[in-house]
Amino acid sequence: MSLSTPDLTLTLRDESLRWFGRLHSMPETGFEETRTAAFVAEELRGLGLEVIAGIGGTGVVGLLRGRRAPAGARFIGMRAELDALPMQGPVDGTVQTADGPRYHGCGHDGHMATLLTAAAALSRRGDLGCNVAFIFQPAEELLGGAAAMLADGLLERVPMSAIYALHNIPGLPAGSVGVVEGAALASSDEIRVTVRAQGTHGAAPQTGQDAILAAAHFLGLCQQLLTRRTDGRDSAVLSFGQIAGGQAANVLPDRVGIAGSLRCHSEAARAAVHALLADAARSTTAAFGTPVDLAIDPKVPVLVNDPA
Amino acid sequence: MSLSTPDLTLTLRDESLRWFGRLHSMPETGFEETRTAAFVAEELRGLGLEVIAGIGGTGVVGLLRGRRAPAGARFIGMRAELDALPMQGPVDGTVQTADGPRYHGCGHDGHMATLLTAAAALSRRGDLGCNVAFIFQPAEELLGGAAAMLADGLLERVPMSAIYALHNIPGLPAGSVGVVEGAALASSDEIRVTVRAQGTHGAAPQTGQDAILAAAHFLGLCQQLLTRRTDGRDSAVLSFGQIAGGQAANVLPDRVGIAGSLRCHSEAARAAVHALLADAARSTTAAFGTPVDLAIDPKVPVLVNDPA
Image (cartoon, rainbow over all chains, first blue to last red):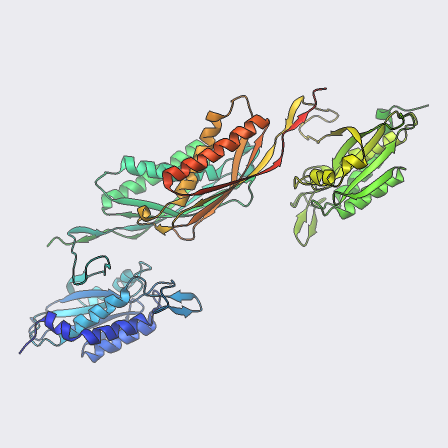
């Protein structure tokens, strides 16, 4: 009797929970996932898979060749992430390191256990008609791990026809899977703004420039332009999480720094917001006489699911 | 032959420059003017004056009784300040201390030399028809020295009918004296604002509050209310010199701190600005849901010259 893949998966429940427990207890941050990577590689080898380790830094790929796969067939990729977050979680699962706490707060431990379970289930099928690559990517949280694997020749070393990925969403009922057609995850850009000024005494603001008021104007203007100059049907979220300037209550400082992040669900909206940020900077300079240095660091593009 | 007081003053030119040079070379900050106070007291004693030292901390008062003053006549007070600033000046005159540089950047060295010169000139007059108190006040820059002398019983120990003070203004031509009737120097209040929020992920601002955007709104609103709700003929300058909040570009922080100062030339304008600051805080809370803690520390009132 041959079990279907879902049935096979059910038989792996205990093994799957063991993997989750082990991975949950060894959280490591991006590009430092050496214990995690070694554990994953060992488990993949234990399933009889060929393993590529150390790709893109700490990345690991397990290769499963289907017995009935056509000769020369490309692989189907499935991807999980190795890294945890530098954060304090509930006591269970948090590891204290010299650099502070580590915790799998984004659920990559679950992703890895899921992918190991899929590898185990598929490796037990004698009738597999395709080749499958199980990709364990480093540094997802740093937004640099996928690029590192690609730069290290992943697609040349493992020719793939498609790569699948998933993310746990605790808000969905257990057993449910959600699929979105089109834009699924937002782009992410980091934005750094420096408002420069000739600082002066607070009693005589007209003898210099007010970088703090200019920064405040910039922040408000950005949100106004966001609702006026992007298509209301688009999704764009611009948040500034950091601001700092000045040392004394009555002295206008010579610079204010602001840092923020932008997330969009279309590249058109993203380009529109980049343009309005530049306009807001120019407008602030025109009004307050304060040069506004704007640096946009594009981290990741919009994730668009293939409609097919 | 008896010289007039202005003529007497001219004969004291060398002595006056010596006093200035010595005082310029020993800058000390508020309530720490021990060397300065000792020097001033010694010079006053050298002029034959009775000296009260250590009043209001480091304050010094020299008492000159006019030979022709009526019995029981009150004193006429003249006041200078002892303290320097914690700042780096040109190399000449700057003293490096463990707590950083000290410099007579506000010209109190000149005020003290002027007052010592007046004391010397008047003490040489045999026909002086009044009593004069030469008041050397500590901690003018900290805005607390005058209050300290009053609290230490200055007016009870030295009954005075009036007190005169002056401030150098390098912008005036040499030899000129400017006198303003009515409000001469602004009030000074320190303002501390804390915008509190439920911090949240920058990608989902609606799940918390944006303290940085709320602070930006508050800053802009304050300047708008200043031009709309105070009498345009009044003088009020509101400057915020310090802002800080947040640790990461993509996390909305749970608080933003702002510090500023307010200067007004009338108590009516001052009260109006205090009221509009409170309204701006309330309005910001209403719009963004962020509690805004507002603390106004009234430092000194408006200095109003007696029209008489």
